[in-house]
Length: 324
Image 1 (spheres, rainbow, N blue to C red):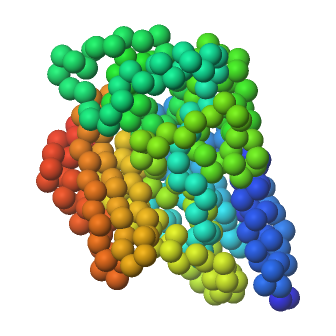
Image 2: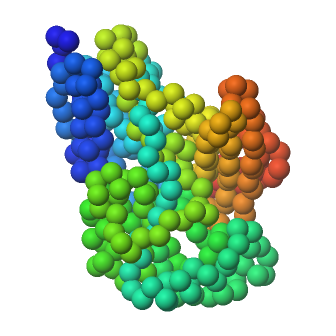
């Protein structure tokens, strides 16, 4: 339609896949575009755990700068990486239909040994008090996510958790090279680039990061052309669910360095919501589950956050804030 749209993306295989998908969706509606590759701070420092870097939008900041400097017209992000408060001058232009929201464990070694280790605790109840030290285990998993670490240690307190950074390919390679039993990945990331290995199991009990599995496209708030172009592929149901999840995150603490999880799903005329907040060590967990009519769900993320704070989540949230 005349203008060549510049799509900003990180250089990882997954990021390029996501940006290429947006490029294809634009082309279906007769919009021409090109990819513009930009390095992010999160891609350049692959050693420091994400929760220690202390920078909101570690994977989106460089793209935000390029967008505001008019070097690109839109930017494509894994939505779970996007701060709940967008940079001034930037707006959400589309949310693509969500892929899998699940986390998966990519394990190695004897499957019977893995199954035995994962069956040590076979329910979702948090382990507290003296029993928290029971079931010592040599089992070691890796992740850079404080949310995954906290949920894993809540369920398997005797396990060890190591830091794992890098793009999908790098992390899969490190799992094979290191003396670990496995590592946690987002199912959507591996499945999108067809790299989910056979030795992977869904962690159905683990609640995802808010907006996990969704892709967000952003543009400048004064760029009506790009906004209108992206509206053709905005997925309303995914946009509703991810907004609720991100409202929940924002109302609690709001950041990648906090062990907060949320999942909203539309079921007919109703919306099902699950959320939790955990202490960093996984010892304490407060959770919430609600079902509400879809047409009454506008403020669900905020109200669920208030309820979970009143149930004891405020104690966990205060402890996390004071530790920073």
